[in-house]
Length: 136
Image 1 (spheres, helix red, strand yellow):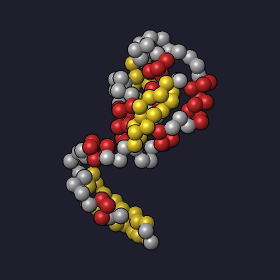
Image 2: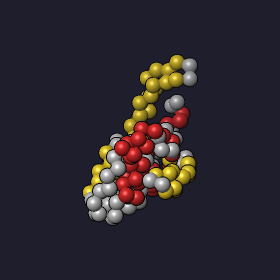
Image 3: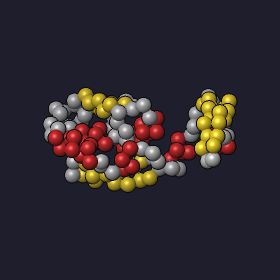
Image 4: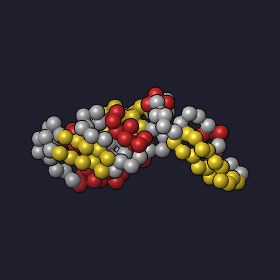
């Protein structure tokens, strides 16, 4: 585990304990920013059907639903059939890879989309999947 962290992105790497193939490791992110292309190497490109349209979709390992429309998001979108007014401000809180924001962009004329998520990797996917969003 410790060797997997040895790169220019981490410093102060300490293994707290280990057992078998598992370990608890602490590390401090260095001031160097990880290059976006490093993350893109792990991307999967697929198509996501939202609101009857097949959209080009990008996902990374570990993201919720893995590039498919999960059953509960599908139910939410079917239940809330509202069509926001043109140029509506829409916040997709806990946006993940941007599924709900993408649906709102299909339903709404010129939406002003704002996407928020605690997961930086999810936001990178959302930036690719919902390029019309104003803020991430």
